[in-house]
Amino acid sequence: MNLAAAVALKLAALVAALTAITVEDLNAIKQESTLGPDVAANIENFQTSVQAIDQDTIDQLNAARKAQGLAEA
Amino acid sequence: MKKIASRFVCAVLLLALVSCATLHRQPNANGTPGAPPTSLETVNYNNAQIAIHNRAIAKAIIAVNQAGFLEPAYFDSLSAAQIKVTRIHELLTPLLKNPTPADGPAIRALLGQLQQITSDMVNIGNVGIKNDQSKAAALNDIRAISSLGGVILSTLVTAGVIK
Image 1: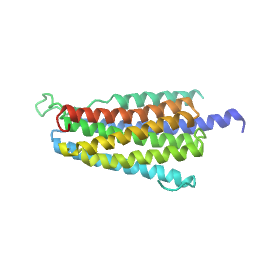
Image 2: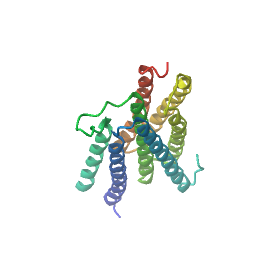
Image 3: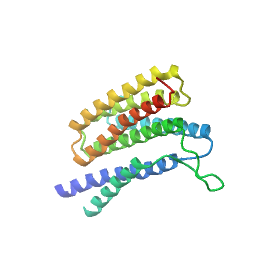
Image 4: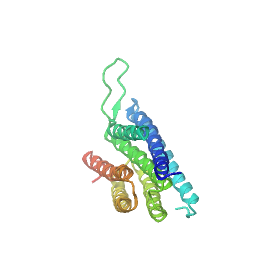
């Protein structure tokens, strides 16, 4: 594989990842930014979503660390 | 390469849209506009944005590492710092559900820790991420966490919830 092809492959992997991030997050933020009439329910929804997202973030980071032979943090 | 470039531009535009989404309430049943968001809804919305930006950073640093633009040593320190940010955020979130003046010192302390660690992450990312576009995207998201923390604090203070 020549250098240009190797660079193109790496860029493709990077851009695919970034695109996946933004589409998913755009959907999440759209959903979160439209409030219903019940204030307490809205706050509870935010709390539940944040807990799930934070757990997902830690899981993804620790899985990537493990794949690199690093200890869980 | 053109296709890759156009996908990258789409990604950047979508990121901009994510950052610009505004908080609003559904219209009432009779079609009149809904009440404006309360300060606590705004605080919790901004807190949710922190979580979303934080996860975006996680995915970005994993992607740049896999693409070879972030050396293992920098990935180690950046991912460890980000896990610390997330753990602090896990402590902060329940305090924002129904904060009282007594929660003020804890909220301030956790937001201060968030700012310190995100500042460290900016320094690590600046040196460690070798691709300029990836670096700019990741650093913007890291800075957004710090800015949103400031907005949360000022919203709570302005609303008189904490001193």
